[in-house]
Every structure is written in C-alpha cells, then in structure tokens.
Image (tube, rainbow, N blue to C red):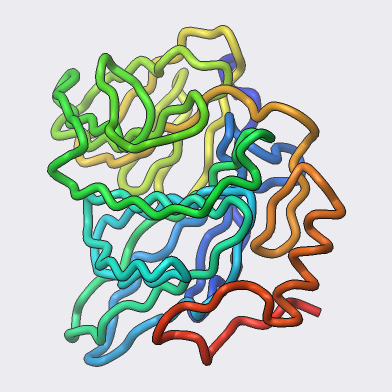
Length: 290
C-alpha cells in the first residue's frame, strides 16, 4: 500500500429500506472522514417496468443527510412538509437537528431505468445538534464546475479547486464529483481528512489500481500532497474536511449524537410515535430495530 494511504475501506452489504446498498462508512477502524460519518452507495440497479424501491418514513437527529443521484429519480418527503423530486446532479441537504422524519420513494419505473446514487450523513457541530430541522434543494445547474486535466470537476458541497458550492453547511468540508473525459491527474484539496471513492472506472495511486467494482474507499494520511490518476471514463467522488468538534459521535440506527442519553430519548420518541409525521405519508413507518 502506498505511503499516502492511511486505510482502504472494504464495503459491507446492507439494506436501506427496500434497497440493497454498499455501506462504506462507518467502519470499525474509521468512524468518519472529516464530518462525514456515513456513506452508502446504492446501485446501479436496472429496474423492471413499474418496479420501485421505497425507503419508508424514518427519523433522524443531529445530522444532515446528503443525497446525490447519478441516474434515476427519488421523491423526498419530510415532516416539514417538503416534497421534492431528486434528479441526477442535484444535491438535497436535509438538516435533522432536534428531529425530522423523511421518506424517499422513487416513482414507478419504466423497463430499463437505472437507479444509482450516494447518500451521506454529515455530523453536526455540537452547538447545532439541536438546531431547527431544515431541508434545502440545490438543482444541478447551481453547482459550480470546472475542467482540470481533462476531467469535469463539480463541487457539490463546501469549497475545493477554487470553487465554492452554494450548499449551506455548518462545517468546513468538501464533497466533489469528478468525471474523467480522458486519462487525468487530480491533486486532492488540502484538508485535514480526505478520502476518494470510485463510482465507475479505475483510480490509480502510486502504481496501485483501485477499480470501481471493488467499491473501496481510499482514506489518505494527513499533511501529504496526494495526486490521483484517473483512467479515461472514471467517475469518482472526493470528500472530507475538518473532524467534528466535541465528543466522538455515537450512532444507533438513524440517530447520531454526542450524547448517549439523547440517543436513548430519540429511541423512545420513535417507539412512542412522538416524532412529527410526514403529511400524506405517515402509515408505513420503519420500526425501531430490536
């Protein structure tokens, strides 16, 4: 393994609602990269006529969900009354704060439709863990992009490569989507914690090849100048930032908090139906795990 790498994370198969995903974060030896403490890769799934994979209503606290699609469509609904179609290239950033409930339901598919995307969770600074819930949608055309060495670089959140995303965040971070039109060489932004993940094609580092089919996340050592080589046709995401402040975050199911007592309260609140409901989608709830 090259000296620039701290760790290579192998994904685990998990279920997210009706969808099978590759779960990369959290990992037993790496709970987070910067403020990002959850990373799911969904698909690509080729759908049959009328097929859909729902994520039924479920709650969150003290985190922000970050949804990004490469193909397909999902309709987001939440307990604030938001109803938003998520399409490829857009960013949906939902801040749970003191508590929110949401669902994600694709419309019925046409035969051959492909569902493919990522969902990340971003932990909130301690001072904002109990903030008012919020939902923000950013269409694809609002996200800045540039060309670097033959690769299209889009800054989805935070700041990198001289560009700043309009996405409102509460931490210093970066989240970038890169598509290599030809063989390309990309130097990673200078942040305390950084990682890369191939969605399609092959990334190369120090003579080692990392193919998208292996679904491995590369976590890099701090204070290194790191250059990734991307084969033509490769698509990858880069992410990271400053670590979260305060105590290490505790995670249980869909709940994140710096306080064990707060997670216990959230568990009781969901069990007793004390969370707010989603207008028009409040029947098929995902139960609290045993």
